[in-house]
Every structure is written in C-alpha cells, then in structure tokens.
Figure (cartoon, rainbow, N blue to C red):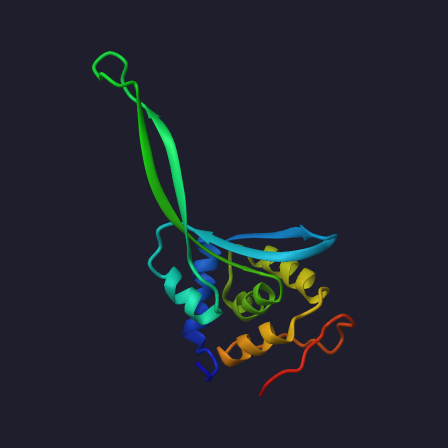
Length: 153
C-alpha cells in the first residue's frame, strides 16, 4: 500500500475506533504513551491490522461457569473461549488518531489528548516511514524537539 488512504477509509477506521476503541495514555518509563485498543470478535479488525501494520492477536479466555445446583450433576463447567485484540501504541497510535480525528464524534476529546501526548514523545523513524508507506498522513513533527524522523516521500 503506497497511496494515500481515501477519505472513506479514514472515516471507516474512525467509526470503528469511536465505537469500539479504548483510548488511554499508558505510563511507559515515565512517559505518556498513547494507546488505542479494540477488543472483540469484529471481522473488520483484520482490515485495521492491514492498514496500520499491526497484528490482530487472539486472546484466550477461560472461566468457570456455575451451573444450577438442583438439576445439574456438575456445579461448575469450565469454559474456554477467545477474543481478538487490535492495539496500536506510541507513534503509530498518534498517526492513526491524527488521521481519524476529523471523523470522530464520540471520543474526539480523548483522541486529541492522546495526539498531544504522542507528539511529546520521540518517534522511531521506521514506524513513521511504515505508516507513510501505508498511506497515513504524518502530523507535523518539526516543532517536536524529541522527534527523530527522516520521512520517506
């Protein structure tokens, strides 16, 4: 993918993040690291993984379900299940939120907060170049003293 993401694609990603995303700033070695997570059995997570360069992870879950004690011979039933998780952090999260922000309606305030946090951390050149190749617009980094970027155009 080397062309700019289309408006419809950005709006689609924004709708998914706005609807299902958990946006938070995670403390990482004293630095606020933006993090966006979507978890659930959502078929479109594979598409988000493709356009953002991250893998969708399968998260196993196991729990004990308490059965009826009057009619059932076994009071506890072991249930094993899994769910899917798509997660972007750091510079990648900043770039994704920057691209999706114009289309976000519900979590736009939190998205702005995460973008601000992300612009204060150092960027890895490889991440920014990868996001550029995938068609994402990169926020203006010139005023960020800690940014380490050599953009590929």
